[in-house]
Amino acid sequence: MIVLGFCSCQKEASFTAARTAEATVDVYVAGYVADLTLGIPAYWINGKMVLIDSAYYNNNLSSYYAFGGGLFSIAVSGNDVYMAGYRRTLGGRGEIYSGICWKNGMPVDLANVFSPFTFISSIVASGTDVYAAGREGYVATYWKNGNPVNLSDGSTFAYAKSIVVSGTDVYVAGIEGNVAKYWKNGMPVNLTDGSKLAEATSIAVSGNDVYVAGSEEKTLGSYEYFAKYWKNGNPVNLSDATKYAKATSIAVSSTDVYVAGYEYTRYGFPAVAKYWKNGNPVNLTDGSKLAEATSIAVSGNDVYVAGYEEKTAGADYYVAKYWKNGSPVILGDISKYYDSKAYSILLVKK
Image 1 (cartoon, rainbow, N blue to C red):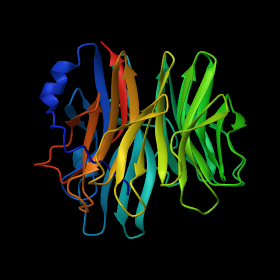
Image 2: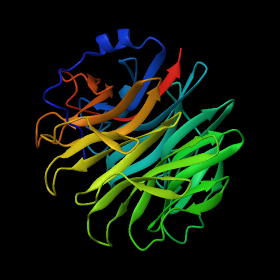
Image 3: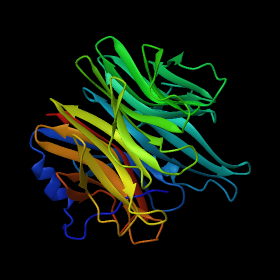
Image 4: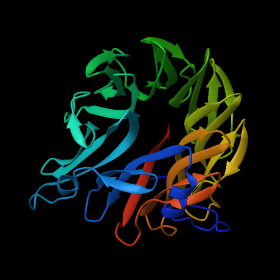
């Protein structure tokens, strides 16, 4: 697993200090924490943690079954908080993951929840409508208010990774076979030709421009990847593919393009969590521990990046956090939870 570290020259900021700093936006971060076995879905609002059905998701029901879960994405509409993520079941049939959505902490059937063949990566709210994106089996799918829209035919593996709504248009980024692509109102737009492995992980729309973040192999089977984004289908490489790098999230503010991701210092060594502003890299960690930046959002001159880091190098246990303008804010209570991760960040104007 690729996880987050931070620069040793930076001091940790407490969530209490961070809360006082957020004057114009509420900061929502989605992920999970674990104090027993399989994890509890959790989100934080301005640093204050909200657990989702903790008695159920972190409970061993018997010597044969245990349940856990986590959140991949979060959306807010008025007073309602929508979340998309997964349920993890460990039992007689081994380990099973299934997609699930919640509204204000309660499971809702925004997709075919509880199915072991449904996975949900992204959720957005637009007016009174709620959209979730993921896959059913091999079929890339999004759901509008629970009604499925198939984006692929199931003949090859496909996965919808990110969804945005702009006016009446629905944009979904993902992967089909080896091809990174997006769909606009169900119509596919290929970003790569399939000759190398590639994926689209995040999508943003600004006016008439469509921005998609992702990655592509340098050569087939090389294990060297460009972190990159596409603007209206035109590729922009963020790394030189001499190392394994990926772009995980994209945000656009005015004429500035922000992309979060990670890059290995060299093969077999910890990855550096980072973001790029207009192609210029900003390291969030120093490479001493495994690190990943998973989500990025911008408000005015402030840049927020969510992710997680190893507690200690090689520990394989992590700490959820976000960075505001490069300064880290710890979210997981290290004294109580042995493991925590942050996958998504959302800014809501006050």
